[in-house]
Image (cartoon, helix red, strand yellow):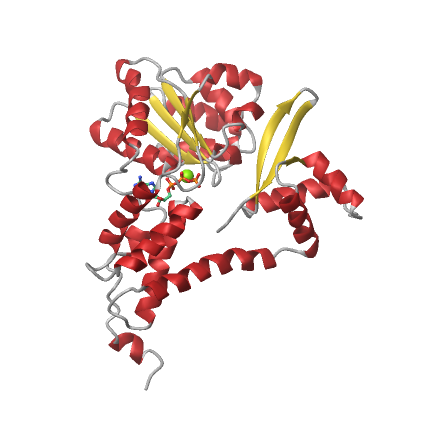
Length: 350
Ligand SMILES: Nc1ncnc2c1ncn2[C@@H]1O[C@H](COP(=O)(O)OP(=O)(O)OP(=O)(O)O)[C@@H](O)[C@H]1O
Ligand SMILES: [Mg+2]
């Protein structure tokens, strides 16, 4: 018997369309975000009359449809008209002004960016964008390492709307005053979904991703409940897919609660395991943050030193940034009387 005979012979047909379960998949409609989408659309309407639109700072917790709602509005815009450029950039992937200018050229189909300096790219961007109004979306804006591109776009492009998306409203306070006063964004908050909405979203993805009637009711309800606790739709999508794979591995015809329980374990293990990947020093710092969540970074460092910690303040800051990148902690910049400071909070993974 070959190693894969059982795979080939078993009918693994619980998952019908895996792509519907992907985080990046953009559904046709984004329910429960109708008001937000209308507001975004209204904000760019002046562009159709060759005026400037509104600038927005869109903020809210992870996994609650910010990117999805904005991408959906841009998709509608592109389907409806060729009279407006739409430029969506994720600043986690394109995190410097230079990379952002290259990305804009790329989106607009200009390919001769190699060996070009930032100033040359800027000139190209101006030429390319000269003909129509533009909507810019900078997603995960808090990951951008510099803001020169914002200053440039604000100063040089006339008919535009700029949407910035972030998890932290306070990010705005970290922005250079000259940029902030030019940007003057309106704040758009995305609130977390309630349990009913969470269920509606997951049901839709489930219906599209799975063969009909393979989910036992209590199994699906368990996914909804857990997602409701974590308050992040991505966790729900992970559980749907993982439970499906677990049931398929056992060649089952139905997905039952035990499959979901195993998937939940995996979700929890995933966060515990990644904590094990940290060095001893990083774990020490993380534990300190867990004890003192919400402290200022300077106060945490003093606490760290008083407990016998030996690394310098700079190294300590770097370790905290690394913990932020791994989503173990959340950093919020705050402007105080004595200058800027960073608040460090723990992140609950599940
Ligand atoms: N109302 C909704 N309808 C359908 N799918 C949704 C809805 N809200 C969120 N989702 C789905 O949940 C997942 C996470 O949503 P999204 O990527 O928009 O989160 P986000 O708010 O941008 O989070 P982050 O701040 O971490 O980037 C995506 O797969 C998205 O399609
Ligand atoms: Mg997002």
